Length: 250
Image (tube, rainbow, N blue to C red):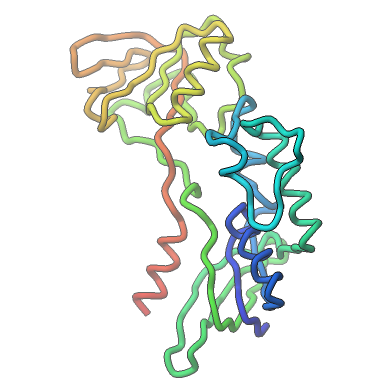
């Protein structure tokens, strides 16, 4: 059993920012992260050409600016380095491979009782915390649409979190489903690498596609178009909602 003042769940940008702010007021904390690194989404699940979509002055974490020579729109590699430097400056040391399974607020004791799992050892860990900060974000589990016939598609069908570059899709016929920032940028990246790219932009997305028949995608308009691969830029499902719901139901 480990007693802490604040338990931070998630070592992405929000969790790191919370840790640095607590440090400024000398408030002790523990930060846990289920992956084996900080900012795992940025390191492992983003495409190569990604840049921050806002100017750097709007994307700084508390108490530390970007280097003066940094470009206005920060590329992925520079942002990851910024986070690494941030952790070093504020001496942030997450407990990696630690997955929160069940938090419960003890009304009589006015504290959180939290069960976590050491994923490396396969053992259970218990924390008692006065405050619980959920910084695990919304980008946790891939959201793949349930489209009739998708299982019959013979080509590659991937979520945007597994897309890296259009290099391997040159000259192929590509369908990008989803028209948010990721969908638009991935479509552009594919096009610049010589792919014949189409993008579904109607909302809701499910309303545009009737079904998939082998490599043929049939749209509600009646058009039937063959594709070599599909990229789902359709967002994520938050896993934090699952274990927080468990605590509310207890």
